[in-house]
Amino acid sequence: EKDGYDWFMRKEIFEQPHAVADSLLGRRDAEGRLQLDEMRLADEELRDIDKIIIIACGTSFYAGMVAKYAIEHWTRTPVEVELASEFRYRDPIIDSTTLVVAISQSGETADTLQAIMHARAQRAKVLAICNTNGASIPRESDAVIYTHAGPEIGVASTKGLLTQLVACYLLALYIAQVKGTRYGDEIEDIMAQLEAMPDHIRTVLDGAEQVYELARAHVGTRSVLFLGRHAGYPVALEGALKLKELAYIHAEGFAAGELKHGPIALIEDGLPVLCVVPPRGRDHLHEKMLSGIQEVRARGARTICLAEAGDTSIEPYADHLIRLPKVPVLLQPLVACVPLQLFACELATAMGHDVDQPRNLAKSVTVE
Ligand code: M6R
Image (cartoon, rainbow, N blue to C red):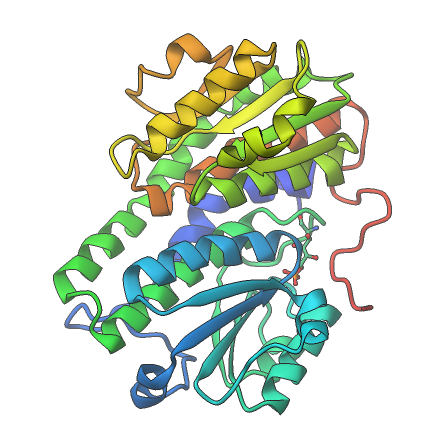
């Protein structure tokens, strides 16, 4: 039941601290080493993997994009991320040293299932990240990492996504442990940071009212752009998808560095642009993002910036500022997605839409 919430979606957004904590539970043995129960791929098999292809659809695809950053950074194994519906039509290069990772909340998405079949026929190993015990996708896979989000009823994926991200981080760290690309204490540090995430997500949820107010002020808006970089890029895409599917508002996500290659032509006076600002301090990402924000603002955009607590450099360029807890860049999607979910849920609700059952959409898409 809805436990006093007006929508399942809202309830599920607020369940995320719990869902993330549950998805992290029991993943370490007595010595603190990572263990994944349903991994079913031997360490030798994993060590032989020289390429990973992630396949998924919709929001799960965005989880896959984040996973690419984490897996490549922590394991030095090349990762491709591909829309499941495109995968088998491009004659992908797969063999027995390819690990195909299929991400699906429902475990029944036909495009993803068909992509798995195609990969298996070419002897790839298949690992599923799934929220539904015994669904078709985990059944057809060699190994599974189950997420522990609990049933997700709202058509829009929320806790499904956050727990998929957790599973992706765990997979990345597990491969790093097996391949020896990261040392044990480093893995422990990252695990500790992951274990702090439920509290950080709670902090973001405590600020829901500010996001709701902002959302209600956007009733009547016809178009919203989302900008991000690095792991914030898939977050921008996800924010845009949520707005499309729930509020039926035209929304686009862009990698901020692409602005000058075209999208900046879209900027006009008063256009809301939601910016996911990376944490300060790595690879000039933050500075680069800041200059992108200045560019759109100089052309009349109204900027809504998600930026970490204490980042004062953003203040002159933000018409609205939503604060995020201070977390590492790779883990930032776990907190940055949350205000975007709240924004879309509230805006759609204020417009009188049914956020649990948006028009034309189904919870699991079992046709290709
Ligand atoms: O069950 P799956 O994770 O395979 O579903 C994939 C997409 O259909 C799903 O994420 C869809 O994009 C959601 N409606 C997004 O909120």
